[in-house]
Image (tube, rainbow, N blue to C red; front, side, top):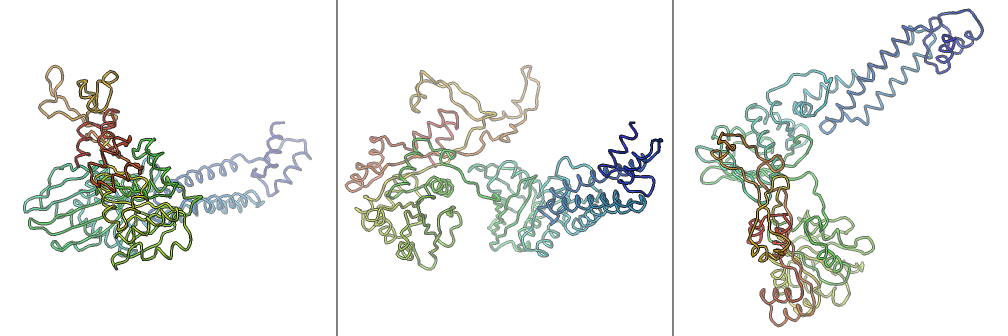
Length: 586
């Protein structure tokens, strides 16, 4: 009975392999037609089919994982090869169970199982030979068993960094080959880029002198010195670096600029090279840029909820809103966050942007370009743009008094919202700059509804920051309550080597924090202030337009200024007092 049951089941699902030339349906009929036992199921043929299927599973798994790792550098896409592989196997399997003669169907099944793998393998090997940098990406990827063996070059050893040189097609490939020609220098360059990426560096600077190369990197707006290297090693690294950027390595005097990309681990970043000859030798700057610019909300940047609500309410009503910050203090990021906070769905927005401005574009805002280099300004196209009757205008750069007057006229007489940005150290300074730019100052004062400014302070590393007990008067001076708080936080700093001992005085090795790489800070947060365009502020602007007068009015009317908000972050343990003071002083 068990034998008959198995034969019937196998015949029903068409997966049995028969020892004769009968089909599965004939086998099922024979099973019920005769009562005497018979060996109609060949176990060893079934075993052959199962073994081939398991081999296919192994090969299919490898193709899927491998194509996912190198799809960015080749055209071997998993979404293409996986259907090919599965479809081929199913077609071969159907032939194997449908052809009456087993020895005729088996070869078809074998070809269907191995052909996609062989095609993929040889195509992959050809691409690796054409672009050796793919090898480093394959080696850097974890958990990649059963990879075909390939020859490892010295250039592929070291840090898991894969470069994409400047240029297109063959030109990019030739630049990469030239950059890899010096294996030792290429490995050192990969280690340098890896170090900068791990520490979240914004800029890496190499100062070439007669005897050595001084290195420093900027992390979160602060310069950190690195160990210098000898001039010979530095020259070799620079040659590889310039080849990657697509500039002339032999030119050491004139200004050169180039761009290339790197994949560090699994993260892709853009790299901008700028070199310039100086009296002592050459200065080289390597700037790290993210592959895509992230967008953040105002609270994520550090704006307190009540400030964000006030600013958002001003964006949704007629008025002039000013966003300000000193240079290199995150103005473009806050501009994007402010525009994202505005109602861009039910209200029609138009952006009036310079042709060279790449950072002010925001979704759902129709851009219109002018060319400031040719003497144009927002006023050049503004009259034509207003024919479409927009609800709001985003103008990052006012440029001149004529443009500002036209924008203020749209606020006062046509009930439109206008947002602009200014480079200034405080919100009061930003307002005064626009006040002095406007030709019709009374109209500007009537149009103004809000102005913000910010500074960037480094965040304390939550992993290693250290609590410090302080005097009550310090808490009070910072704006806190001594009855509720008596501690602040400082960054953890490794003691000097001679102080790294245990309780018995024996030397011990103290490692830096893995989270912040021993810096003590990780990331930055904005210290915001906001001025509300109320009647008292407007009256002060008309009668006494000065920084002190504006700030006094802001304090009397409940305005939140930079100093108080900076120390508020220190009281909350988000940053340290010294870092808040540094940010406010800058």
